[in-house]
Amino acid sequence: MLSGRLVAIGPILPDDLARLFAWGDDPEIARLNEPYLPKNVDRERDFWLNPMGDPRRIFLAVRRIGRTELAGYVQITAIDPIHRSANLGLLIGKPGDRRRGYGQEAMELTLHFCRSHLNLTRLSLTVHADNDPAIALYEKLGFVTEGVQRQAQFIAGRWVDLQLMALIDPARRQNTPD
Image (tube, rainbow, N blue to C red; front, side, top):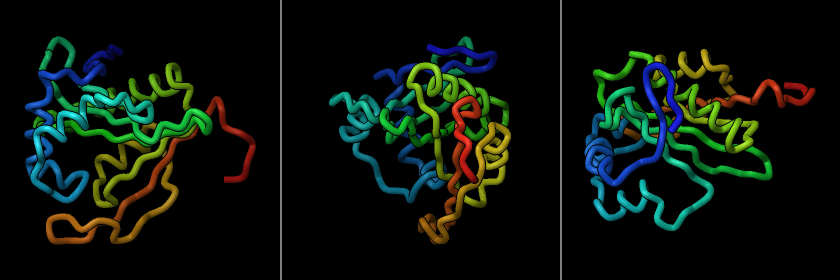
């Protein structure tokens, strides 16, 4: 487990599954990432616990310091050890826990984990183009916008643009034109 001042990131545990299922089955929370679809308990368990040991993905629980309950999660997917890249995703589940610094610290710990333990150089993510707080956080962490996928998702009756962002470890950046 990696700890900061506010949160720690570590493994998803079987006890976390009920909360993860509830978040995934809540249309208001699901719309932050994808269109809402009813969830299947067995598929969700396999998704989160990764019983087949897929090395291309790591899911990390975000817990507030001193608490065992789940505050959110970080997903590291499409891990490519040859190109030293991966995609990131973040969710702080409870609306009351958002904008308190938990997401920022969870991402800072994740960036450290990706660089120091996975030896990754390029980290990318997609974010809804109208999610100004998330975009501001990612920019604060050094992510830059690389493009926009217009009308990429249809969520809750409307089209949503996706903003593509990436961070290249400054210590590993090559002298190439941007």
